[in-house]
Length: 140
Image (cartoon, rainbow, N blue to C red; front, side, top):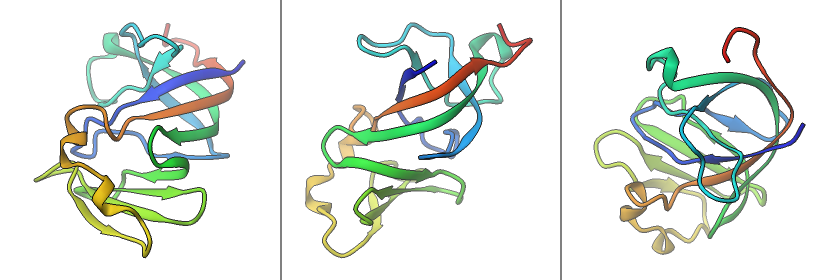
């Protein structure tokens, strides 16, 4: 089953990393998704279990509305998220003290097109398509 998901960062290293081709267990919010989406990825997997459920799925594609195809989002390093795009460009975004601020980027990345306000207005949100998705037993 294919699932179209919204990934909207909550910052502070609460978000799940994503990588095209990666199969893993992902947390999805039980909140109603925005129009045109099936689900919303959960922020804090440590939140009460009633707020999210888990699905096993493969990341088929990731896309940013303005910046294009994304190959990976690494949320593991403390205080920063790195977005790697399909063409090899990358950008590291502050996720702790000044969420949304560009800390570093590859040559040719359009830093001036990135507004720090994106941190609070869904500017860094992504559309993620998952394939082979199924809910993990016991998380209904």
